[in-house]
Image (spheres, each protein chain N blue to C red):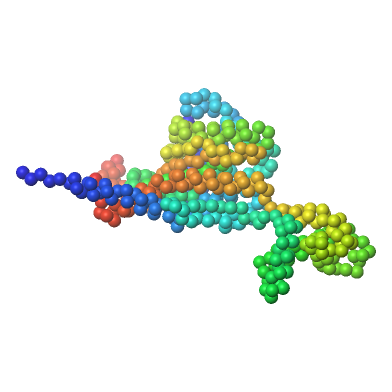
Length: 232
Length: 191
């Protein structure tokens, strides 16, 4: 009688098992597999939560989604697409850096856009809110806006006494106007927070639900590659 | 359990039939009246506004019903498998499809927190009760597995999430109804 053992085969297979599981996990957590689904889930979630006037905010939020490899899995993030509200100090710094760059022969800098927006906001303020007097009659809104912008973004030490006094009077109105202009037609912080948390919760539910099936599918694929299908 | 009247899940109108069934099922309960849930007598349900997919909830919510439930079809692999089974008088391919929905429960106004919590608890409890969800199962929405409600935001704007996984069962009517067998034809002629 000949006694045969399959023990070595079993041992070999068990040795391969941890490696198989690691490989299957890596494949099941590949960012490529999740990217489209996570984007769509975020979109569906936001569509369900937004009010009619907020519809146009959905796409900018979805565009911020990033799915990338992280350790043994992936990292998915969605962030607030709204640019930060800039203060007068920010614009002053941008003007200083722009002036220095231009004096060194540089073309348009990264700050050009911000400063153009600032100039436009100053002109708009003159057109809509400034109480004009006889000194303003022979000047255009652009001229006045340009001068007001100069006063606001120039340090006090470089201004004359008369200019400093004018700046002190104008400053509270302009700061208020700049803040209002940058925060109008924006979502409030609470809504942004709710949206981000809701998408995170939907993602978490999706991954928890889908991951076991995917892992099982990848393990099954590996077993068939290795010719290790369980016989019925 | 009262059977649902809307048509069963249909392969040619999958989303529409599923949403109609959900609408009929949930509207029966979330009407502000007490209902028996399985063996539990007279469980009071809040009156809620039901919305589906991208439909927007009435604003301001606190001046409408105060609580809204929006059902959103979750994105997933929607694992499908098929089997052959008698249906509509002949053997047909029956499709089983694993799906999930997110129920977003929102509430606002006075007592919003308690109302939101009550609505999400009732929803989760109802969908976990097989005696009640049997009506959905008869129409092809089977094996419901609701998750415990999750609080997303619990301050001024109350938002809760109830995730429900399920299996859809519907025939893919690919075969014409079987013609009568010779035996049946003979017996008809004899009559």
